[in-house]
Length: 251
Image (cartoon, rainbow, N blue to C red; front, top):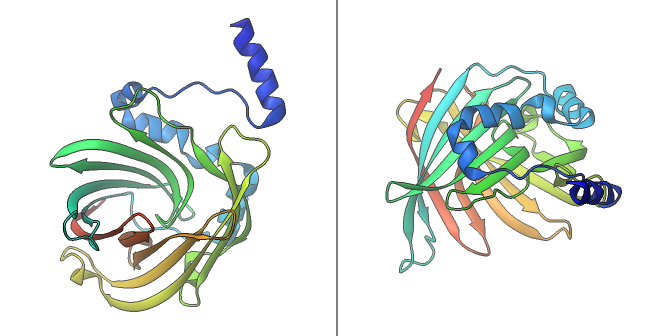
């Protein structure tokens, strides 16, 4: 314990503090509790939280949304295309922020989970992914600061996010990133799923890394009545994936 404490002091002076490893099996005992305790708005830095709440004080008209996406993966390679499903649970925590837990499964068997605090299910502010077959989850990643942040109300003229990010424990040498989004056409949301009301606007977002190199392009449906986005198309150097909304419930 003394050696570990000394290592903590040394690590803090460099890149990060010491944190306890997250055991995947422990998270499974109380997934909702883990999400609430690790990804609440109070877990953000004061600067990041203020940037978001100053930009967007609008309130979303739901308590919780649960929806399922059915994915066709590697659609550009017909010989390797495979199907997965992803179930999202979104909890409204105010000012456009939602706590998100998603679970991915294949052939009815879950294989991974993501825990996030997200801005309208569009930009991940803080997140952690875990392989359900692993012992330890990777470290949480989070936004450290924003140079530019557009509220969703600006989507008709385009959205821009410029930020620094790193692990939750990291205190220096953050990475730069930015995301640029443009609006497409609108359609009745019911065309995506019969239970949906209002309009669904296409928003295409391009995610760039610290070297300003494009990493992925994601096409979202912005469900205007609910104030959130749902991913429809993901394109990267690894694959092209497309989704359909299989179910959608609102509380």
